Image (cartoon, rainbow, N blue to C red):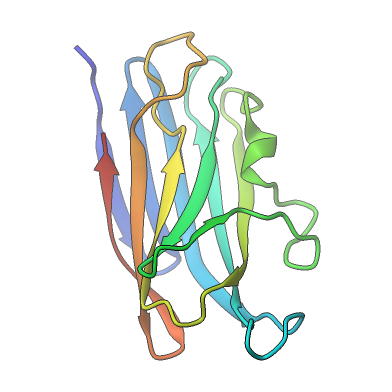
Length: 167
């Protein structure tokens, strides 16, 4: 029987989710979402850049072998991939695809998701994070479980609303 334990902890700096699937234990946490105007586009095409910081910690006794992915989908039906941008991050932060199979026991990695030219008229969006649940011990297959994180626009800021799992 597949054992999963999910603990959601909301603190002033963000959220932390602990996921256990069989013998694996992975912490995934995130901080606030930052927005900035994209000044590289013409006025009619102008969008916003969204920057989202997260961390992943391996609480296992073996290396994690998984495939992570983060995708943003707006209420207006637009999908955005995570784009790495040196102008938005420090060299200590990693893009999610650089973490594939590279998290050894007891290691915590910090990363950033950077979404360029997001629809400025969106009222809400979901962040979909896959690869947090491993289907079997010593398996490198991608789980079908996806963490869905909802943000809503309040004025000029984005507010975290809730999380749930898509199975």
